[in-house]
Length: 346
Length: 257
Image: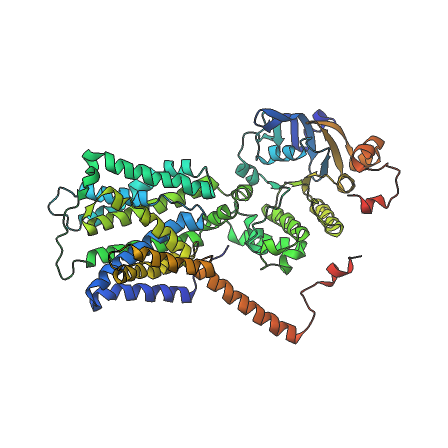
């Protein structure tokens, strides 16, 4: 499969990141940056999940475990230091690499199952991690949680480092997605998603490529978790290893279109603001969850494969039928049915 | 076909090969030699182990005993990817194209293990000349093609590695008579270009007609070998596998299942 980087695609990406880059500088209402941090965070999470859940077709429901491990890594390392400064950001690559390596045996075991069973197996990962966070009290602080060293940033621009850190992680996740798609890894993943046995048949290194996607995906999610922990400043098990975070990243990819570059980003930019809006509109009651679900239900009913694939397909169909109509008008019979195929029929 | 005497010239040489799934053995000592440039057809009843022979050659299944020699090398322990590198391509019985990829992408996938893009492109163009369907339906999703067309694309794809040995598992299964004819014509084309084909065929009459040599597999062993023509004329083979007497009307050729 060929995925060309088109000029239009580059411009789209350029404009997107440029706008996000200048937003803190231009300024806006106080809640804007905060909402955007969470939106970009989910876009990065969903894009990372998309590597394994979308491109490889392995819908992990346990990815929040890696998010939590990343968060706790930051929390544990910087809990006692009075001055965290920018150090937690610089430590992110180490956390990412560590979690990526740690995830390989997990991926190796869980990816012996496929599809629905894989989703269920990975859910257990979520609960195991949460249980560990509750019970390894000496390390995690148990149910009482863990406070991260407060960030010593200026009040006026306090959010900026977190905002740009999330933005960089999103750019990395999308860059890796793009690299995957344009390289043999992406082609391998596409065949794995289509049919693993057939993939074996043409010589795809199925296990290796699945593990690469799983590990990279887990490492990225852990890095996002690290930034998040530093931003919120206080983590406890049901918050850092929250099933809603897993569901969020999966739903956003499904909504925007899994296995596409922009789908997870689009999903995040629709769902996170919608969620914030509903939470505000319906107050502290959990009613917002119902509105959230309703939006999702409506979209899934009408665009079951996600927004981007549905739109692309619709456009392609319209273009094809337009081309077909033009051809039919010009010459009635050619090419469609080669005569050699017709005449043999007895 | 005496195994020992042909060993030196045989491209593929199975000696006493046993293999199976789980506990039971399907192949109970298969001896078979395939000479370079020939089409060899394996026939036999269901469950005799025909497909299993192909799998042990392509590496989808490891042989439990015996040796699988290819080009003078024992390949029995090699993974299937390594066997692809040595030029052994397996076209399985069930549809093996990726249905959502285009015909062209599927053909390109046949050269997945290669890295030279120019070579891949050049091969694909050559293959498209041999199999016009590839050029004609280039951008169509492979899943939208008919069964016969898909089989043609699968055969086309098998050429992408410029293979020394092509393993074809029941290429005519599930095809209408017209598509079947064109599939067998394509198989003959493959061999005309000097390639070696090991063919498993339930449709024994067509398989034997196109084959230079043939072997009858029964209960995991080779029961009989000979030229394709001699087996076609063998009354016992005719009675058991051709569904008619060898002296039967020639029209049976066209209507046999």
